[in-house]
Image 1 (spheres, rainbow, N blue to C red):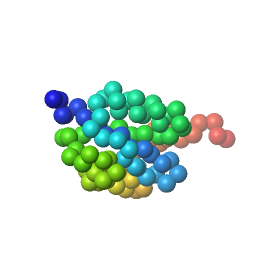
Image 2 (cartoon, rainbow, N blue to C red; image 1 turned 180 degrees about the vertical axis):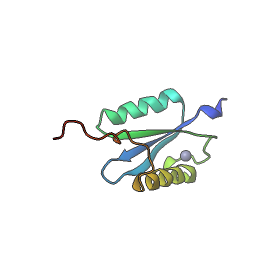
Image 3 (tube, rainbow, N blue to C red; image 1 turned 90 degrees about the vertical axis):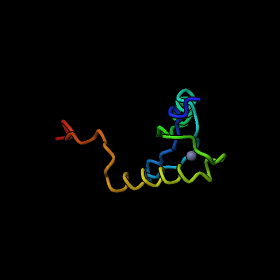
Image 4 (tube, rainbow, N blue to C red; image 1 turned 120 degrees about the vertical axis):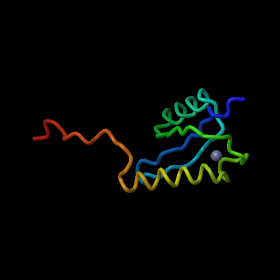
Length: 93
Ligand SMILES: [Zn+2]
């Protein structure tokens, strides 16, 4: 078993900048499929590499995912997440 390659997928709410874990213990392929599934519903998703297999069977009650989601939400709220919109908007005047 290659547990180092497990992924967790979080849904990103663009309005509130909050992250909600929706799946964990996924293979890279399954994580990608999940992201694509969300994208097809116009939802943003974030994939996280897990350092180990999460024990909780349900992602909803998984403490590790919850903590990761809270971390990401906090970073998003305080603007620490790298974004690509740091360039000045060209041609706005
Ligand atoms: Zn988890």
